[in-house]
Image (cartoon, rainbow, N blue to C red; front, top):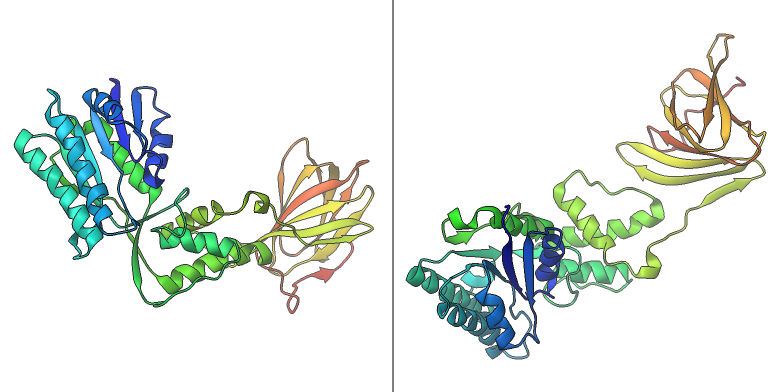
Length: 373
């Protein structure tokens, strides 16, 4: 996309709208006009008269009475179309509809009615119309206790508020906000060449209410047990990012247990079931730590502040090997099995070392054997 495009976004202050605006604002070739609740009809007409593409994201989800569904989901769509009909140039229109459009309820019927307005318009004027029947969209900036169970669960769990589940086995279909925005953004490059009609956003994830709640609870617990959540699956990675966005601003930080003595301190930072753990070791000047070896456990040491020396001696031999380390030159030192080893602070200030071990510490099987280097 090289030429400038005029982009109109209705519902620009809503969940999807806010994310779309944030993404499209990065592109200097886009002229973005935001339509919100208090946008006047004259302003709306002005925006639409210059639009190349309209992202129609405005809608009603939780009205006081069912009649508002039609007003917000069909009538406003029809108002936009009637304005565009009077123009010589007909912009492409992208509609965020819902999978509920196939359901026989007030919300679903209003969404389907809004779709039909666009389909009729497209057929009459041969204009480009793209309709997305979105499943449950989740991600940052989604309002809790509104129309997203993910947002509600994230907010309540992170704020120590009980959640209520009627059916733990109820299956949810979820799509991540960034995937929605990526799809919408891709339209800007070739919407003029695309065929009108229904389009899809993926991937769509399936998860039960019970599993969703359990996973979000584990994210909360991870700050206490220091276990890094399993993020190998795309859904869990996206849920974790979403969960963190609901923390209160005074809850971003959390304390770690520091094991302190006259030599310095040792603090476990992160743990994983599959890939061991990371700890932070602080040594006072002149202090030597270690003097032990392992059968299977292996480690990586990274001095990030201060200076010192790491010494090795292979079990059963006399030769001592030395590696000088410093926070001025970041260098990872592997600690192989079968070598007794220690680390000494040679500087005049605390030496800070990031230590990774390939397994979680097991007090019943520490695999650690004292022997002076």
